[in-house]
Length: 141
Image (cartoon, rainbow, N blue to C red; front, side, top):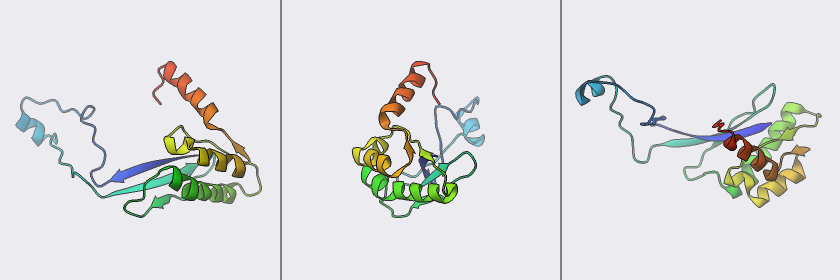
């Protein structure tokens, strides 16, 4: 299983470098949808989801306004949820967990928790090696 987290805002996603409108004037660009207003501090929601070869976990919603993912919340809240969901999805089968190299994932407490509770776990040392190889080859995904 692997998991990831995402913040969704009321503003949606807007990347001014990629969302280009060709127009003769600023007025024409605005008429074609080129003007994007955004809130300075939009309402947001963080969601985590795990994926396996055959099914998705239930989503985990960070409901508190100030609850964000850091080493402590990842270790104390999200990892037990992922373990519970994995056991539900796989039943008695042996299963493993893979994560990326975000700072909360490579936190020492999180790594120790994963080694202790998952049947199979890819530690940060191996993830970093694969990440650096893909960066060297120019793979941005």
